[in-house]
Amino acid sequence: MAQYNKSFKVCGTCSYWGGERVANSSGTYVTVDPMKKGKCVLPPGKGPYAKRDVQGNHHGCNKYEKWGALR
Image 1 (cartoon, rainbow, N blue to C red):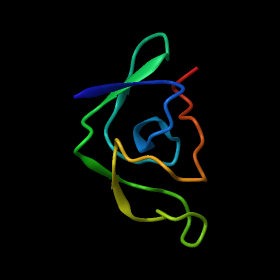
Image 2 (tube, rainbow, N blue to C red; image 1 turned 120 degrees about the horizontal axis):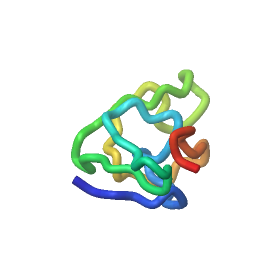
Image 3 (cartoon, rainbow, N blue to C red; image 1 turned 90 degrees about the vertical axis):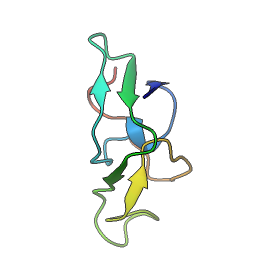
Image 4 (cartoon, rainbow, N blue to C red; image 1 turned 90 degrees about the horizontal axis):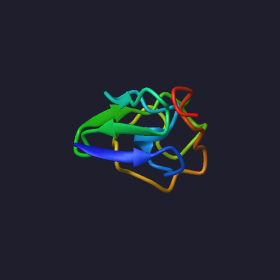
């Protein structure tokens, strides 16, 4: 398992990532298995990983939006 700070722009902290993750009670970090994949829920054609399975530690998407559970 890996923990990513709320300011770290990886799929595991993005609102469009559909994989398993857990935010801590204060919303400052998320715990995710970096090797497990989750589906990017962006509509097709709206981003480079739309509707694709991506790992929680993946970074580099220009459509990133911080997950709402993180403050």
